[in-house]
Length: 394
Ligand code: ATP
Ligand code: MG
Image: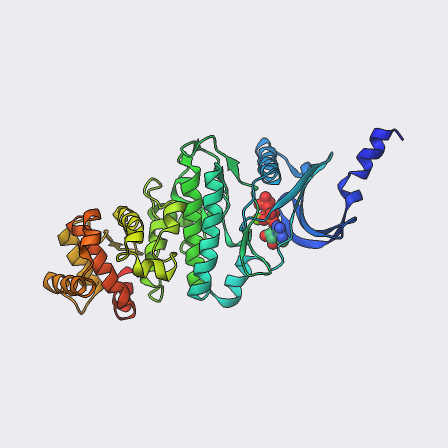
């Protein structure tokens, strides 16, 4: 045997790793737990069988996954993404050697407990969005975000995996036209076969994941595909009344039919539901947090679009779109506070309590200020208002 062949044989996957058992099975191969024969280190190895590719599309699918995994292996690294150790290509197979994530799939956690407790959901969802923000910042889109592709490690943190439908976009606004991923998590622009931008499609899927985390069910369901696609394209879903106000607000911003209005990963991390409690509670009143207040104000300026409950349409507007609308929404939210007068009284009451209005004033116009004071008020009496608000949106 020539020296070159000898070296090649020593470097084959089988020579270097021992497969222990199967962790998961996919369309184009299996994921195994494997052990490095030299170091004894355990890895998860995705073995993609090239012989199973029947069409050009399938070949492209594997090439993309290989390219993204190689990109990760050669330097991209995030604490909430399963780290790729190396990618080996042989005649019939591609081996993606990854960090082994021991705790199983988010899917099973949701299924076991029929939904997660809110603090767990919040922590895992924040970690997921951090991972999504990281890939989007590196012009990578996942396009198959679902609880089966989100793993839990032994420290109870999440690790995103499976870049099989991933793609590298040249820039954030590049338009894509491959329709892929699981139909239950697919965005309206995907199911209506409209050319789409990658990042918003991932954020929609995150909205479905968040809904699943909090309710243990999927927002869009249907026995037949056309029925399911119709519900998705119409944005036809309801949020159960026990989901808290901030969490339902975030779900609505993620499950926003208009991709250009859909919340981004960056803005998502600034959403009140995901911010550490100290930041949301104190942001108005310390000078070091004025920047944060202004960012929150900008964030709240983003338009919230209509949410349709089955059969009838229910229009939701941002609280400060106009005084009239704000007042009417406030009225629906707080059945006990029915007039604009009461709202103004509340706002004066809080101004008096905090007496720091002048610090904040330059950043806000009249409506913003009213809205912030109001949201602070509502936040403090969340439990009290929650039930009537939730009844409105379900
Ligand atoms: P494709 O959609 O490209 O066919 P797939 O869904 O078959 O991919 P993955 O999602 O990458 O492949 O892996 C399948 C399953 O294997 C996962 O859902 C998970 O249970 C398990 N798995 C994948 N990667 C790891 C890992 N790094 N550590 C532990 N288990 C893993
Ligand atoms: Mg998968």
